[in-house]
Length: 575
Image (cartoon, rainbow, N blue to C red; front, side):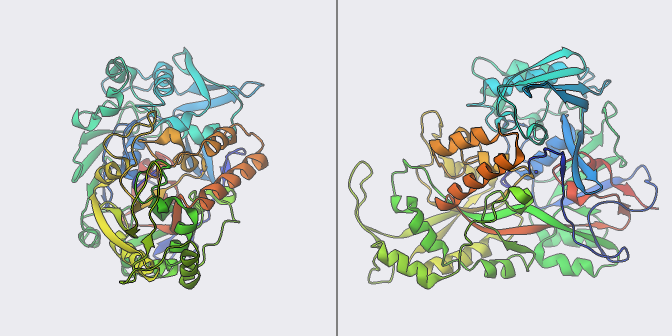
């Protein structure tokens, strides 16, 4: 999902190993597993600081990863991840157990009884069935954001209050990993919003209608998009209750002030340490710094809409490759991430483990060769050194024009996107191409610039004006979601490129039905190769996930970030 929203290898065996950085128990650096000696002490307010904000509490219309975290806290899920002996394992959240039919098309879930929505209404399997059926019905429009989690689902039914059956059109190899991304909403609140076409499902703002009706581990007492949101443990929660008596999440526009508040004891936990502050915090004896392999990748996003009317030279993968060869990605790692990142070639990122295609590229930093490619393609330099795109004819004819482009950058990244842009800008300049930064505003505003006001996937409108953006993606362990974002079905929802490739879309649908792990892996690798060869993105970096917390708190499981309610319920105070 992007930070621009958040975000596990097909879990056929239901286990995926996530390595963690080592370190002895006396060091300020922890592994992030949360396996700390001592008995949890109930109580206390866990004060969390973040440079990411909650843009929405609507599972059908959000984009920030912090929104995903909040919904994970307040809405039921069927399954979630947990720490196993050898890595992360799938366990039940609301689901107590599950089994599949002999043909693999029906999945029956036994749900934990006794749960309640925060308005006192019983939580039943009817809520789950209604949520699933509604998402399927409006998957091409208002509920498209949630639809990837239900690929190949035909329908769902509640056979009794605590029993749910999900029917698929074919056996699916990654059902549980997909369902981990499904949030269940209260039918009695959301059903009246459907109307004739379901559009209100996307426009409804639960955060503007407090209290939010929820049935997860917490309810929300107070919400402030660019301030502090207060989470209170919900007594009607069906699972293990929170150790803390409350969690507050405060958004900071300035990371320096956030770190200062942590060091002064006014915050207990910072969920993403700025990369230039890591070493300082490691030297603070009152803090614990956790480092784990990260799911977040950064990239250059290219407008790949085959119907874009201008600057169509940027649809040519060879042009994009030549320009990308002038970007010093190692310098970005050193300057922007202080070394806490690595090169990445695939959109799915290193979090996907063996499902990440290891045979892509690598993209070499060789600007001399990139310039030669542009010369060979006929992009000559003008008198000022800027290359000229030749005139074209046909439906989208454009006169000869300098290769000068805007790059959209959001204001909501957790890394220094301005400095990253400058390095890319310098590299493109060496290739004779001029870039201008266009600060797009927060996530919602920046995404609107990419998609245009008239975005409509069914009508193939939108993605008509922008050329490039620089942003980040936070992927899941299973690569399905990241593979879905470049499908036509995600136009105006998750797609930030406008790519429209029917062959790829067919491959995406097929990969979900391959129950043989090796067969699915090979197709998933092929899909990544197609994305790479078309330069839908130029992948830049995959950075580590680093958080820090006061030594007065323990039980923080950094590896479970965005994957489990236990990430929020397990922290406890240390006497």
